[in-house]
Image (cartoon, rainbow, N blue to C red; front, side):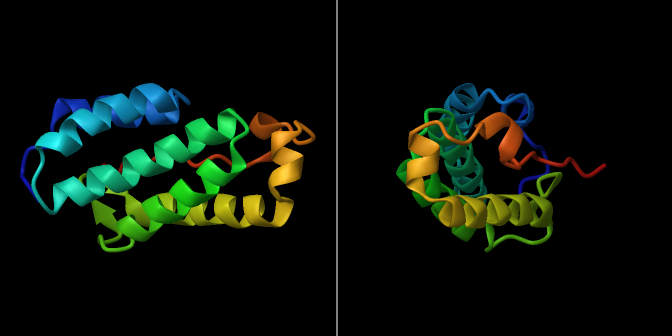
Length: 129
């Protein structure tokens, strides 16, 4: 891990936690493209979860489920704390949401039967001080 965490990463974390998932994707994608490992896969995992939440907001159950799984699997390679964030907490929240979506099923999401913002536990990125 590099010693200096780019300012853009923290901007992406803030966007994620504010629910600005499309903006978060754009911010982290710019970092991801230029990064080398191990940061490259880390950024990709976080941005995949952000895109999953963007898809969920658009009631795209399939896109949300696929990207929550891919992002979570990518982040499992990292220690509990990485680049100043609580990876375990993000993984726990993302996994819980994925399980909830799988149990709920696509129909209730795509038809609007479920109020996404009030009924589903959306992940947040916890910063480790």
